[in-house]
Image (cartoon, rainbow, N blue to C red; front, top):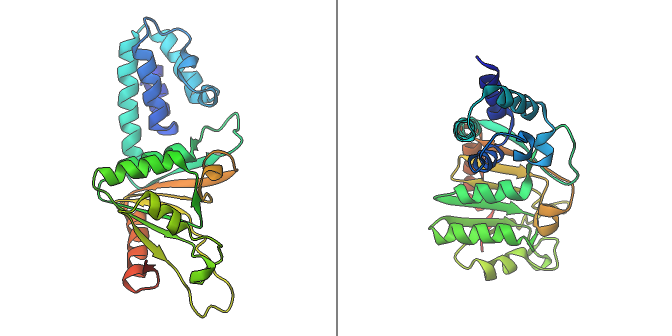
Length: 250
């Protein structure tokens, strides 16, 4: 394996596919491979895989189009890695120098964009998440069945003054809405889970509610899980809760 082969393999295994693809697109439009570090975002450019890649590119003598083709192959490999029972780190908030992480909002929008049949979004509250709303609207437009499970208002046995489902229904009248009323609970219990599940094969599980602040301001941590072994069980669990009327369609 040449140094360039090893560097591209490391890029494929350690950096997000969208980051790799963007670098390939930028490089393909150049006339030389100089200033290789500028292909990457400021955060990724500080990592060892990118440093090794830049050194290997400089020594390779290959053209920008040849390197870009190799990067696109790496991105396709990374897509496959991410799609087969993998877990990736997601983050909103302050960035570290040494650890590249995928942004929560971007990853959620990509997950929604990947949905072809079903999308379930679970959140305590939901408001002012405009980019995510746009992705959901596009999903509905291409025929995806979209469902929401949110916390209920006090009127319906929950803890909120206003019901998030009322706001969401105005934006997405075609969607299905579910509520956990939890009657007879000894102590107040809320819908505190936050996740989005696409087609039973990809899920984002996080601390972030579906709000603008959570997507682009708060310190939020999440995981992007791919593969039907785990995600399929998540989807089946929520489906069973609906079938057994633990969560009710409203």
